[in-house]
Image (tube, rainbow, N blue to C red; front, side):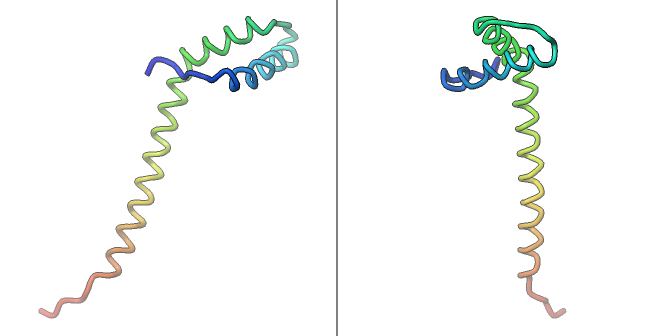
Length: 82
C-alpha cells in the first residue's frame, strides 16, 4: 500500500480543515490546490504509518478478545476423575 486514497467528498471535507489549521496555527494562507497537494503529500508519506498503527491496534484488540474467549471456553471444561 503506497498511500491512502481519499474520495472527492473526503477531500472536500479535509481541505478546509487543512487551510484553517495553516491559518490558525502558522498564520499562513493557502488555496485549495495547495491544501489538497499537502493532503496528498501526507497521505503518501505519513498515511502508511497511521494505517499500520491501525492494523497493529486491531490485532492487539483481536488478541485480547481471543484470550477472553479462551478463558470462557476453559470454564466449560469438565473435571476428570483419575
